[in-house]
Image (cartoon, rainbow, N blue to C red; front, side, top):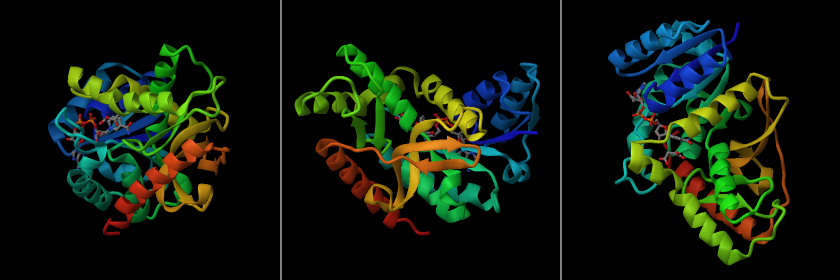
Length: 289
Ligand SMILES: NC(=O)C1=CN([C@@H]2O[C@H](COP(=O)(O)OP(=O)(O)OC[C@H]3O[C@@H](n4cnc5c(N)ncnc54)[C@H](O)[C@@H]3O)[C@@H](O)[C@H]2O)C=CC1
Ligand SMILES: O=C([O-])CC(=O)C(=O)O
């Protein structure tokens, strides 16, 4: 029996629950939201879809789930400049949820922004080992990077590391075409604004994140053959970094992060990764954990 918990069943959490159930990935789903009327409505709506899945809303069941997607908290509005600006409003949400999550034994996928810092916070507060704390965002940034590269006629493996935010690090050195620094900066500026275009138009990003989160769930359930996926990992010396969570290429399997893969980054990428680590590291050091 495989179970998925989704904490925060608003736009993202609701869509993830729907997609995971529709794809038949799990036997049971536990959905929890602070707004009980929304939680009830999501559970009922999902039940009306007649998928072959058990639907629960009991928070106590979360700790036994194989995978938990954490998507509770405030999203950005068009007025919120960066994801990091959400930290002070979302930390109390994490605190409240942590109170209900003692001895969680599965794999945590952090979605709530600012995702990297929140992933680190959940790891520390819930005492979950690093391999079982995966921050989601790198796949989405990489998909946006691939789309942007397509406009330039550039193909190849598009990956984004670093912060899921202003300090994201698109990896150009693994592409088939060399991209000069001036063009890299132009593309990076576009990537920083990519989600805001959706937020302005429809209130929040949904399809993109939900589709990639479900792929990450599949990987964490051991259904994707230890694929290397860009995601936020709690580092312990990898890439010369420690005591923070940051986007890196990681081999994901049934136990979570099996290996953080060390890529040879070029000087431009290394400098951006150092900047990202310094930004996230400062926020992590400021946490009261
Ligand atoms: N990492 C990523 O790539 C992405 C991250 N996000 C982030 O995901 C988060 C959720 O975004 P949306 O679903 O659009 O927001 P939303 O507002 O639609 O849903 C958030 C839900 O969290 C619930 N919630 C608040 N406090 C709670 C608590 N203490 N316990 C349980 N539930 C609680 C709310 O009632 C609401 O239903 C935001 O922080 C957003 O920035 C969104 C898209 C992509
Ligand atoms: O930009 C936001 O606030 C939501 C998000 O993280 C994304 O879609 O990448």
